Length: 378
Image (cartoon, rainbow, N blue to C red; front, side, top):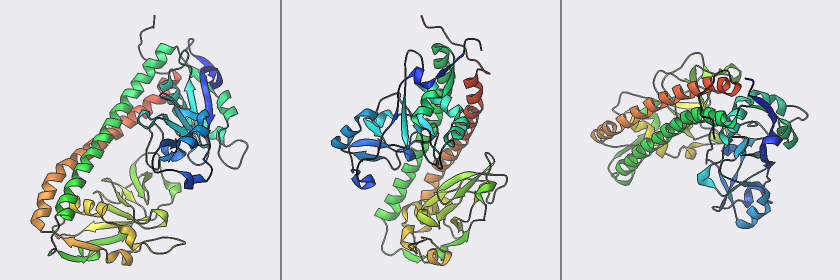
């Protein structure tokens, strides 16, 4: 470890800075234009385009001091998502950031940008503690970041370490993209067979006659664990628990709050909280695959009631419309789609394995406990 040295971020970066929200707030966003990256777009290890905002050329010019460049590292610096970190998304550039996201740009003569990202991810607990100093809301100031110290090996070793971790992330990303493609194929087939080519003489019945509708179990978030069986809430997976409620995947409809009506699909061996209604299949010829893609295509928002506290009740969902196609057509759909769903589950299991390996290696590689072989640059 003698060749590893500690540096302040301000001495190994060429930029540390955050932006602002255009005048008018979210009402000033455009349908298209230049990307404005906000905290919800920055997840640990990866960028998500969900909720990505856009601004026009004039708004972007006002934010010209926070232009996002390829190889920048993005770090959330305020609120509940503080210290989440990922690389800049090359496919969404040009871009700007708002006041909740900081740009960190490596000095390429001293610091590999991927190593910087992994160093911040490995130091998340320290950054969270730092963000709690001096205010009622978690925040990392520019001064805090400039003076934050990181441990660095030589640049060639940085690149070697980053390559090991990046290879795992690249494989994880590939599997995620493959799963999206597989699901899109199944959704397209469902839409063609059961929506675009639906027949007027198909019977219609209340959903409650087709499936059993039940609430999940109460589970305080304080009982969530860092590993174990997946726990699903109104917005999807929210953590882990030491036992599971269902051994098979289930179709879930969020039933409380702003997420009411949102559809989630749980994993096998998962725990489902009472923020979701569970659509349990009956022995009537309707396969899980058909029920899943029916639910994903149906607008359950039609059954949300209440304005102060939106919700969907079992009684309210009972009369949702279910159109009965010929069971032979359901069987044909299931035969085609089930192998796609099996492949998605296999990919998910592999993703979990790779993420566990990456999370195990990350602190060991970033501290020098585990070393990698590398070639010294001439």
